[in-house]
Length: 314
Image (cartoon, rainbow, N blue to C red; front, side):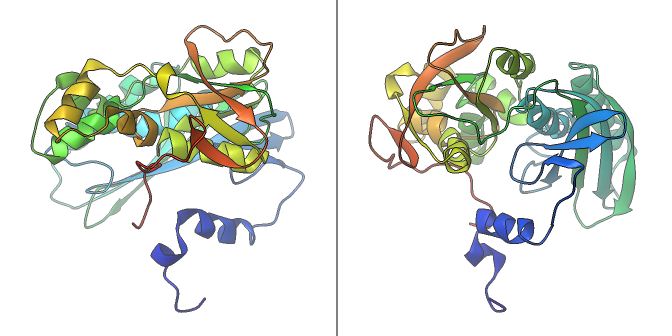
């Protein structure tokens, strides 16, 4: 183990290693392994999540404006709270950057952050700053959830559904990676996503048994639900609408299957959830599959051959 690298170990095995050394306490109601933690306090509870964005890995300044990057950094955190059925109320921001970063760029970054926070009524309440060789943004969000929905509650027979947009942001990344700046709908969604902030609390109220946000790819993220719930999930490929912009990018990239962007793309920060068979799906949610006995995620009953989603250190 001493000579093994984290790239060789892999992200999720690394998370398991870390979780095994953390311990727990009576204050930890939901600990590591979900979109957010659920913590008890002397006068109530709160949910909290952290995300980090690294220049060159999660964003590029020649692709996105500072305001876009600010919006995306905040959206990634608000989406984690949303995926627990909650609403974010406060954020703390850690920011590191080279000394020659323009002041106006930082001001525009904060402007984008505030704009995204305003969508749910959250406020930035503090943080930290440091010098670094590249820009790094780390945000911790805190919020309220009347009934936190975890990844581990899916039951055999549940219906699987999603809310938001799937495939658009990853199609935008594909276009930008080839030097294109269109189609605008896809490129703009990669630069600054539009998470369905009302959908998380609505799902919790509507009886969702499990929920997760789609940051790494639908198949990869539903894989976490299947693993945590000890079930299998099967998706119906005919249930997914393929947006025109996704079709356009798929064709421009040499006939790539557009469904790949929907199933294995990330960065849209849509939500996926499971609901009891008898439940009426809340507004904005679309049924895409079913929970079965077994393990893993399949598409039309078979493993998907086009990849499952983003992997760190690949």
